[in-house]
Image (cartoon, rainbow, N blue to C red; front, top):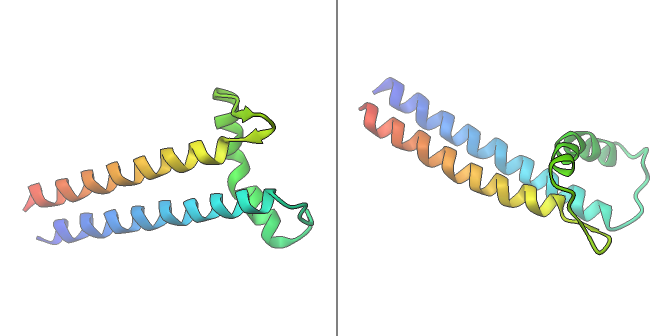
Length: 98
């Protein structure tokens, strides 16, 4: 019973962390449409939080189409899929344990 609650809480935490990262990616995409001040702390945070992942995705699949970088869109789709799969798997594990 206790392990079930821990796994359910873990599912919620994983869901929240992925959702927060999705919002960070959306913020980075919106900021990229304008010419932001690179010394702004928010811009620096968004860049530092997303660029390592963007770099890896761009290395695997170059996602520039007509001058538009589609990397954020690819990451949003992948993270949404991952979020649903992980949450469903953890909830399923929690219910089979009890």
